[in-house]
Length: 93
Image 1 (spheres, rainbow, N blue to C red):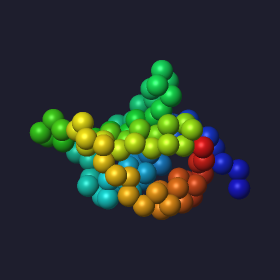
Image 2 (image 1 turned 90 degrees about the vertical axis):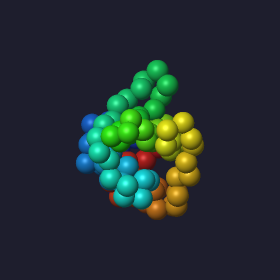
Image 3 (image 1 turned 30 degrees about the horizontal axis):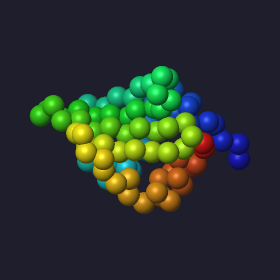
Image 4 (image 1 turned 60 degrees about the vertical axis):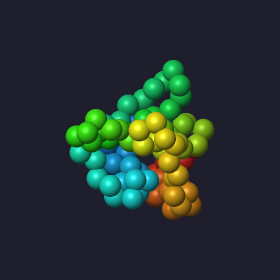
């Protein structure tokens, strides 16, 4: 199977939502978005709650992933499951 580069995720909202749901353990966004920050070299998936608190997932095009809730770095969880899902969606670093 030929994989698309992670940078192409920005054009695939269903894939972004699937990754977001897996990383956040199904918390369910009240408002969801994704943007590419080309200056910093990553794609950001985010959700905003009614309280103004946000959750961000940064997917760096080299393959590293960071997950923040507010200003706190959160664990990603089972990284093997996450890698499996990203590859099942057709992407790789």
